[in-house]
Image 1 (cartoon, rainbow, N blue to C red):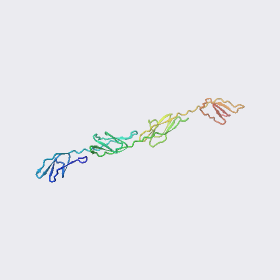
Image 2: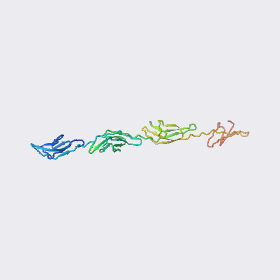
Image 3: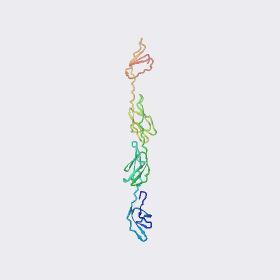
Image 4: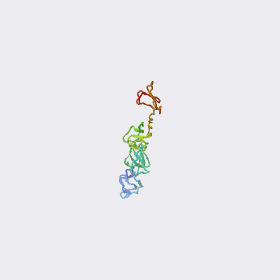
Length: 278
């Protein structure tokens, strides 16, 4: 017998068409010319001519039909993740005596009852000896979810009048979310305001749940606002000098000073020279 044919056959090599042949046992056996077709079992034949019957032949044995494995049944797929490009599924009726093959097979590994495969749709067959099962139901491994590239950011720094800064991710794709605290929390908007001075790790999360690498963005300290200038008593104009002068007592060479009104005023170091006026 074969994987697809349950009976075997054998030939009467000294066949004589004038004889009548009988097989023992006879259940399920057919004799057509010199060919005997029979199910699993051991058989002998006799030949009869008239009232005379031969001795029984040597016995022949028809083996059991080779077993054909049942089609593999497959579990639901464990899909690829942000960090793992392949998926996997399990052969739930696994038999260690069978050999399994996947179609298509490129990139597929089968280890015990676990099949690991790249994105694609697959069927499996099981083989025992020369017999191969029908194909399993198809399973699909999805494409690995994409990981966003590291964000490009711009920083609006604090000003003299605003103590905090803001960070903006300059390219925003629909559905992505943004973290400005190294992945602890995410928001839909691509701008985070009210940030104190410091360095922030900015991450993009894709719609598939994959996080980009972090981009550091630094919010500077608020620029210092100078104290109001304090001025000394005025040296007033004299009969011969038309201008007066006064001194900036808390003068700082790193500051730039301006007078209001400014017409005719000169500022040199910590000394302000001015015409009559307030």
